Amino acid sequence: MNPFAAINDGLIDITWIDDSAYSGVFGVTGVMSEARSQGGIQAYGGHSQYVRGRKIRVDVPATEPVPAELELDGGETATDENGEPAATKTPERPQQVIMIDGEALNYQNSVIWECFPANIEVLIDDALFKTNKTFPRSIAADDELNRLYTDAVDKVWFTFDSDNSGQLDKNETRTFLKVVLGNCPPPNNYDDTRFDETFLEMDANGNGMIEKDEMVAFIKKLTMD
Image 1: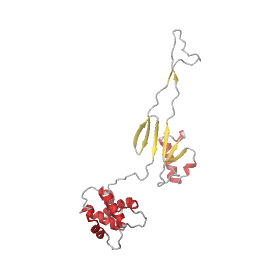
Image 2 (image 1 turned 90 degrees about the vertical axis):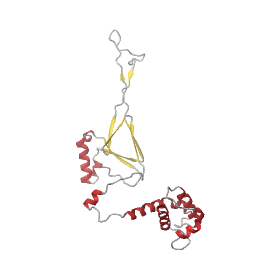
Image 3 (image 1 turned 135 degrees about the vertical axis):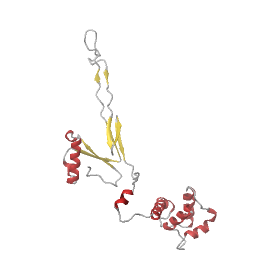
Image 4 (image 1 turned 45 degrees about the vertical axis):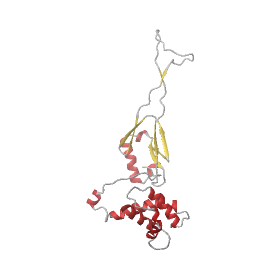
């Protein structure tokens, strides 16, 4: 629908069909058909506007006030000193409805779209994929667990790797364990009084430094024991 959209640029893209000839169901279907069959060439049709940004607000235009019909005894309409109707009435804005992914959302004055990068969570029931054998293999439970632990370490690693070496020395490792494991829920068997012994246990290759995979393996073992 929006040939200018990019899925990973942190912006939200909106196609706004403002040609009344295309505003009905069949008109929208026609635009979508053009998009599928012509690879974005519908952008030159002149029936749509394309808007993009981190946060987009659309306001409903205010309705013009309607003069109140105040009649005097003689059948004349009351006016003020400028010859205008003596009173006006501003009609209420009607409720607007917008459909997003099949959900009807009501609004009256404005609607705001805002993009929150990396905040979309997709939950999929994999039963259908397994039944249809969609994928040649599935991820083993242990592999998925390793991925989760690796992602968790990746998110905080550079906070403690002060020299950006890709490894943690003894002091950096101690700080990492104190801060990260201090906020981990049980089971959590870390004991800072045994740090020297723990460091030797973590340093699987014996180089006196802790790599990411060593940290992942240690935290996984510690929180699962």
